Image 1 (cartoon, rainbow, N blue to C red):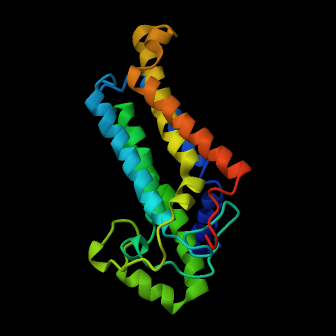
Image 2 (cartoon, rainbow, N blue to C red):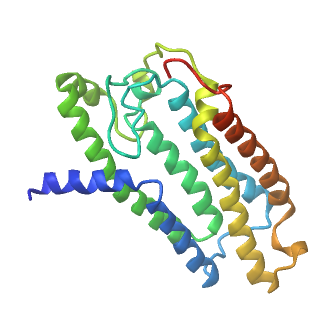
Image 3 (cartoon, helix red, strand yellow):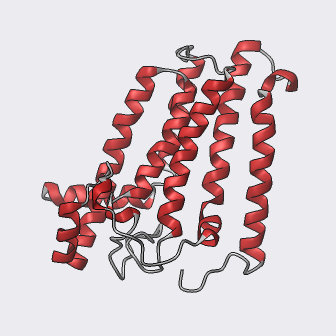
Length: 250
């Protein structure tokens, strides 16, 4: 098999399992924490906690912008089963970067990685993230090139794959749909807070040597996680049992 075909094949495989394979980062984070290498910053430091959380939420905002302006059937509506595109999405955030959802994923993960508290681990995760998503982006773009031909090539020539070029901004042709964002992003939003709380609990266990509720989780996460869960449960219930979050044509 030619290298280009091998890269596309592996990219499609990684694309299919992209929601699960990054969980390997959790295992790596646990190793770093229990080995005592997480001494970059004090996890009780509220400022550091908020900085890391802000990085992750910034990634969530990027995803929300992309999803809120994405019409049905465009290149931004791929499914777990494979690539889907009836039209090429080149407006709005897709006019400044070709893969805004993956850019959002990067910041969501990096906030959590930084909270682990080890510089070399953070740098390693950036490298692994790039290798991981490079294959996925390669497979996705191979599909779009076959599907849209010169139209895709013209867009790709002026739009960078990962680092935005804001000078090429083109306004969206559809209105922003908050319902679409709420319907699709509540799980990832909740996972951010759960991830921080779990890392915090592991760090506290090593520090205090006991699973005492008074020391298990810092007050910040004891407040934010229940709030995030309430939002998650409400949106999931609305999605599964009502049509409140349904948007025609989206």
